[in-house]
Image (cartoon, rainbow, N blue to C red):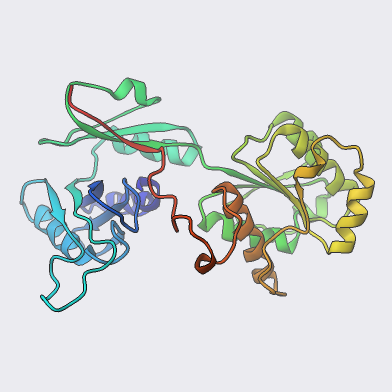
Length: 332
């Protein structure tokens, strides 16, 4: 997706290098990457991203370098199995991929995408499916329709992960959540914790009681709230506010005994049955990093409507591939 490669695209542009984007705009069967998956290939020989998870990237990079060298932008049709020898088994994901190979968008589209991602503002990005592959943006997809076929990607604001407690664990969770593209807010009323410097700069740190902050900044259904302080005065207030505010995932750190005490204290709280505790999946870890991974694994699973079981024990599709953030506008 554009969000995955845009920091690289912007850095290369600022360095004065040309960049070609390869975007998965069609597929006639199963695949390991969703429509909209993007590779960015630079004239300096480097590249980022993927369109198939590894099966056709070498072919796509070569096609992108040809465009960088002067070849016309075009839609490349490629299959993961087309280069196999007759006696080699074709991969399970042998669908034909349609990959648009074209230059990265110029200004003002580049700047609009960069600003939307930095400020967590929604944006619809459209690229025509025929020469000259013009780009455009709008605040809603309704304003990007037209006479010609086009591929539109909807860039929604990031999901928010709101952590109650500026602890060492919160700092580790924040680092991992940033890699997973969550917008992280850490709340703590204690000045010394806020000023500790442990939380990475990618997270917003606020000296505030979580319940007061959540009353003003109401969580959305796609947001998650996790209480991490082990201080009932802070955690309990945060939990009540999160449950009342409609966050899709509300959890609290602590042992099973601690959580049982917490439930007794919070008895009568509306929607208490939605509270997850102890937070996290059963990974058996003990370190800060392992605990953070456990928590974020459950956060991601809940956001995707999954239970976090072993893949080998399930029968659902491994990935939620065809997300609603990308779609075709067909020719009329």
